[in-house]
Length: 445
Image (cartoon, rainbow, N blue to C red; front, side, top):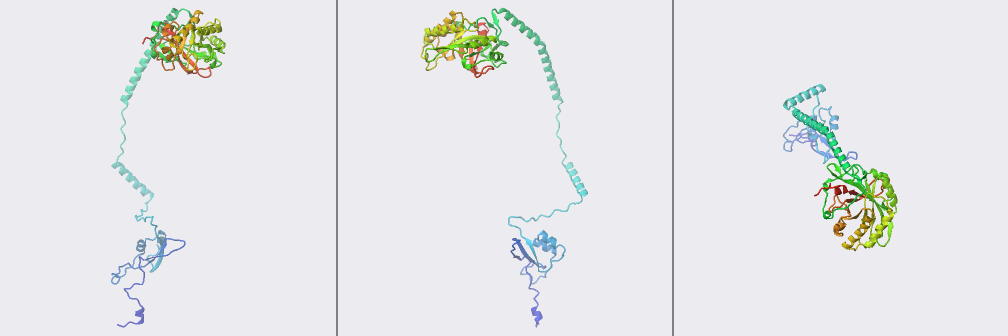
């Protein structure tokens, strides 16, 4: 069969002149770096084996766009055309490697608001029917209320009965107190609130047979309303609150001190030097004596000794008597003997210390005053013969919540860091237990 030139120029049916629809030709642009050019044919793609036998089937525009994953902007721009022109070239944006292409089916367009609301209402009602709301069961509080009212009623009845019996008890206590007051002789002045009255001569003396025993029950110690320590038994206060002062405490406002519930004050008369045979008078002795008495505070005295023998102790006692000049005192004149390491009286023996204390106290006693010995708990138990000093009595110093020495002492100095209005800085606080000791009201334990 002969062919003319037109036939020769005409392409054969089985050979395609259009490019493959899946072929992508990359083009670089300065404005869109990741944009690629795609050439598409309207014929259906066939494999190399089927190209010669199968007939080309045209594809619709939507199928072509779905196959090539056109960008939404491109799809909207060509939505009007129903068929894709042959050999049309368009651009798509290729997704990045770190971006995932969503292939989910797009959400349908919602219906009208009324239809949507009705649909939601039907769905909500169906859920209520399937899963009804279970409300919690409220407990029955009737029984609890009845029991509470019953308990409150019983408490009110008990309280009314206690109040009705209280006046009778108070009258009985007052009558007992009046009987005791009438039995007491020689009452000189009243002490602080609820404290034991002060008699003419307060003595610290104890029986020598009971000197190594504890006559007190420390469970009776209480803090009173002035925050001072007190000894109370059966609702009665068997103690007095006091302080000891010297020139180291400075000028004292005795009116303010009295309002702090202080009943007595031990005033220093003087002291002997620790390293020399010199006796020094306390610079505020007269001010303290006058201020305490003017504010109705009972007064006692003490002397800080450094005597090394009995003669020096007598000289110290005579010095005290000369400075007091017959001053009337309510409490004893106390021999304060507490030498420390390095003092001139530190190396004395037990017999020497006892003789020195006896010499001082006997001289004071001979002048008409009561006398006593002040020392720490350890010194009293280790450095003195207490049975020889029992007729004078003891003033114990131990900074603890209760004394630990088994000694029948009369006054306890329980702190040297007390604070009172009217005194600048710390002050020594004491509790006088002679009402419980000498009146026979202590507890033997």
